[in-house]
Length: 194
Image (cartoon, rainbow, N blue to C red; front, side):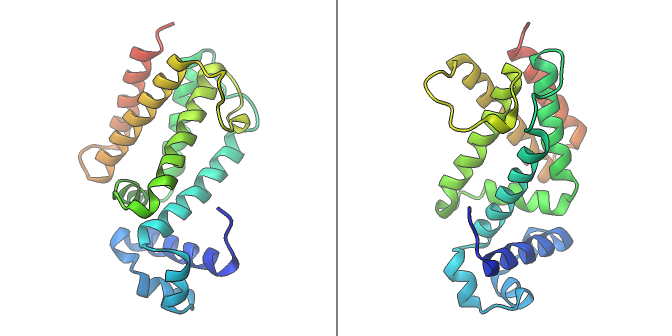
């Protein structure tokens, strides 16, 4: 998503509020006041706080792909490479736990204004996992065309869904981060039998 300076300021402000005080702190009126823009300016660019937070997630995703996507994912086999990707995703999100919880809440909100962008995020994660399975660089992942192995796509999609569901559980206080990673590890073992 390409953003103008005001939109970036709005997103950065929402991130700071979420990071400090969580999802509930991202009220559009407070975002506008803190970003020093009119409330109408916020609404011109974003329909909801979920949309602002998804824009922040897109920025974080771009940073992650830039960081780990330049060369093939490290690991001796597909299982190790997939674990590396999910560890990197989890570690990246947990640098700022309040923001991570707000992002998860936004992703799971069901807001129809962000459906396409949520689907795009899930597709990005699935594509990164597919690159790890293949031993390719995650940054080379674009749109996977007709050469995609359907089994790989299915496995990557299932693993991404397990990770996301576990992350929702973490955000809701059901379990800790080691459990998120353990869930993904177990699913990886079951699905990527060498």
